[in-house]
Image (cartoon, rainbow, N blue to C red; front, side, top):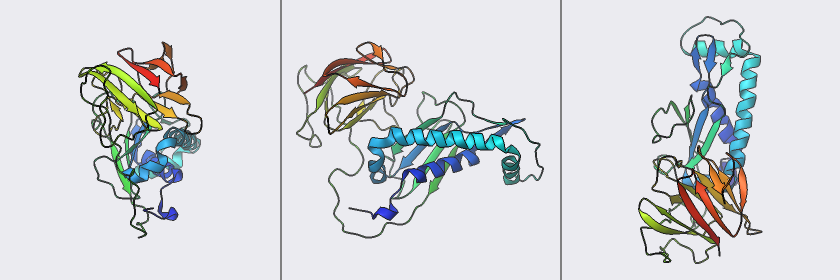
Length: 294
């Protein structure tokens, strides 16, 4: 073990920093105040690991906290707006404006990633936010706020580390003959399923060896296990395949803009569907993944 329990980050730490980021990123336009609708949270890779399998649940909790915060702002906007004006050097108190705090996007976007740039230390949280809907372009354009919150320093303990810690490794391989699968030193012997597909680099086979596989085009600060070279209709993080370690049951969650379908049936945005032993997973209608459970 590398950290004692009291020094670990928890979900409340993430919620607290997102809400703080909402306050700092508020943007006043005439009689309205626009709050950020997009939040991307980055953690040290080892801090991210305990969150990995519950990221969708934590993201939903953060969205609920944002709903509560927005409702609270609109119940007493005068006090909060005064604080905002004071922060920019004005002393005037605006009149009460019920409903004056809004988001311009249809819904909250909350994403949690490991920091692959190795800028963060253990216990640090970095939050990027944007006012509008998430863009399909490379991440970095339009980033508005950034905040790093150092937590308690690590307490020295035994120096042993688990071999699985560290940044996740992409296991997709280069073009290969049909029916042949490459393995790397990182590939465990136990394979749960296969994904066979053809992208712009040719035919490939991906071995599913973990209980969660993130699929998409990837990109800077967009970590995926299976990186697809294909059209931008496929999101940088498009879907997640999850395995229940107790039952061996597989599901696929759609987190894309243009949709995921299983055997022609749409999964639904931010929804999940069961994966049978054999299926075709279609991403945005532009690339098909042939799914086969071992």
